[in-house]
Image 1 (tube, helix red, strand yellow):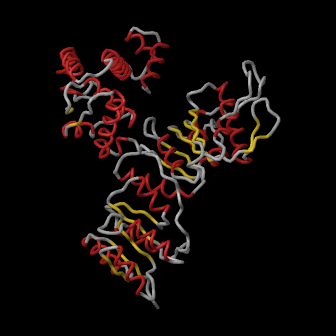
Image 2 (cartoon, one colour):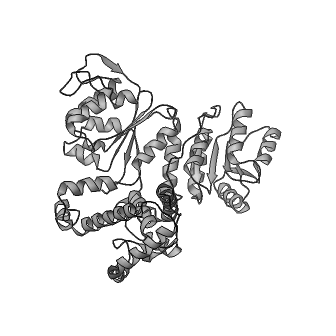
Image 3 (tube, helix red, strand yellow):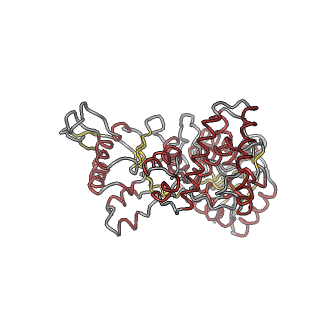
Length: 467
C-alpha cells in the first residue's frame, strides 16, 4: 500500500532538512526541491503527483504564490498546497487563500502543526477548485508581524471567499473597524458599499431610523423619505459597531431582518428586500449580556457565526515600533511637518507599557510627539508625563515651558503652519488625558479640576478622540 507523499519547496536548506526529518519520523514520504521551477519540472516527469505540496512564498525565481497559480492554471486537478512564509502580512495571507491554498502557515512554525495540517490536506477533495479573482485591494491599515496578528491575517484570509456573518470582539481602540474593512475589502462584495454604524454613538430615538430609514411624515421632522444603513449597504457590508449597546426592541427587528432579508422603513408599509453581509463588533462580553437578559440569545447566535478577536496592543508589543513608524509618517503628512523617527530606547520603553487605549492611544501619541517634540529623533525625554518613566516625569515637571520654547523655535525653523493651533490642541489633549487618568476617568471631577463644564469636557474629548 502506497504511503502518502508530500513535496517540500523552499530555497532555505535548513527548512527543507527539518521538514524532511519530521515527515520521515511521521512515516510520510517526502521529496524536497530548492525552487518552484524544479517542482514543476518534476510534476511533468512523475506519473504520480504528490498528495500535498508545502511551499515557501519568497524564493529565488518563481514565488510560492506563482507556483500555486501555475498549478491551478495548468492542471485539471492539483494536490493541496500549504503556503509557509517568514513574511506574514494580510495581503500575502489573502493572496494565498484566494489563490486556492489549502492552508497558510507563518514562520516560525510548529513542526507538529505542519504535520497535522498536511495529514488533513491528504484527505482534501477540492483539488479542482480554481483561484478566486478579486479586484486590487486598498490598504487595510492593519499593521504587525506578531503571532496574534499573523493569526488575524489567517482568519481574514480564510474568510475571503465567505459571506458568513462575523462577530469581532476587542477592547476599545484595538482596531475592530479596520478588521471589518479588511474583511469587506477582501471579499466578493469589495466593489459594493461598506457602511458603518456605531450603536453607542447615536441616541436610541434615532437608531431605528438610522438602520431602516423612514418615510416622509413618519414622525415630526421627517420632511422627506430617507434610506437607512441597510438600504445603503445593499449587496455590500454593514458594520454594526458596539452591537452590545443596541436596545432590546431593535434587537428584535435586527433578528427579523437577518432571518428574512427584508424590513420596513419607519412609517412604511412596503417590504424592502436587501442582500447585506453583517459584521458586528463589541468590546463587551455578549455572553454575559445574554445571561443578564440584556441581549437576545437568538440574535447572539445569529451574529456569532464566526468570531474574530482583535488583539489588544499589550499582547503584541513587538508591533509597536512598526505602528509608531507608520503613525509618525501619517502625522507628519497630516500636519505638514518633518517626519520624526523613534530611538531604540523609546521603542523599548513603549513596548513595556500597558496601553489601555490600545492602537488608538499610540496613534494619538504619534500626533502629540510630532507636534511637541523638539528634535527629529524621539527619545524617552520627549514623552508626555503620563507615558514617561516615573523618574523622568518628575524631573521634567518643572521645565516643560523650556521644552515648549525649544519646540516653538524648531517648529518655526521647520516652517510648520499654524503652530499656535497645534500647540494649543496638544496642550488640551494632554491636560484632558492626564486629568482623566488622575481622577480614575470620573468626568465630573476632571471637568471641575480643569475649570470647565462637563459638556465642554465631553465635547473636547470627542473632538480629540479621547475615550
